[in-house]
Length: 319
Ligand SMILES: Cc1ncc(COP(=O)(O)O)c(C=O)c1O
Image (cartoon, rainbow, N blue to C red; front, side, top):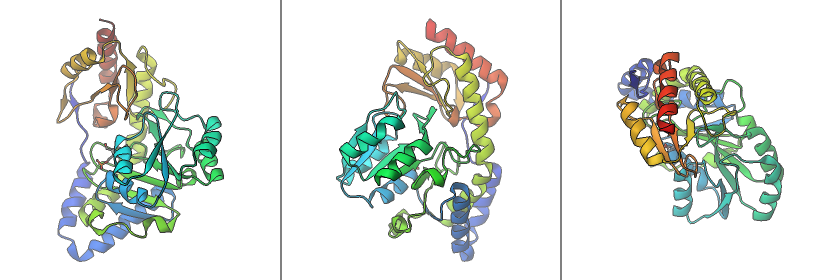
């Protein structure tokens, strides 16, 4: 079985090479990519920055007081940035990363955060009920910030949709859904959020040219990754959130260290890897091993390769 780590598409690489020589039309390339982002997320305004963490930093700088994050399955960088900015962090109790919108109202009233930062997929493996969460946040005056790094181009419009998030941000670094190798962005209808992004955090026109190109591939890439994960979840024993859409698959494991080592040896990925060991805040805080399907070039997500992965994981996880 040959597995390849995802890289920017040939078209994106060509667009980026071409942009290197287009210094005079620099601003045009940036503006055009920002327009593509607004079309993708259905927000009015957007700004492209040099990384996902720069986008988080820029958004978070708008808040004073408390910010809320899920107690697991979010992005650990969000917590580090909140600590750096001296913001109080409140951990929202979840069901293995999943937020229960029915319990959210009371918690928001009691804890009074200014904003809730979450990722579209808890641990990249289970889609959050974004619309329901948004309705509660909107009602309570809490700004919902969706880190949609793993969910751009969702054809069902349930995730990365500006109608269900006050602010969307994403990394377009590697290996993400809009996979340019670096960069990130913010989109929103709240113009004031984008008033003062720091100049040195802004992206160059080459990254912007890559983003414009890769946005075109996002819907098909995301849908193939999700359908591959759904197939794996159906056939693997003991996975978390088996009925929810995701871009990776997290398997329960009695001995995660051993299983992760054996799987790394068996599932070799050219130019990268696809195994993460848990407990880990960014995935799940339980003994488990995550198969990072989102890291793989979608051309290796053949039925044959997926069946081989199932065979390997089921064999090694019971050994
Ligand atoms: C969900 C999520 N958000 C943000 C980031 C940070 O992005 P960047 O590496 O572009 O700063 C990552 C990085 O892996 C991520 O997984």
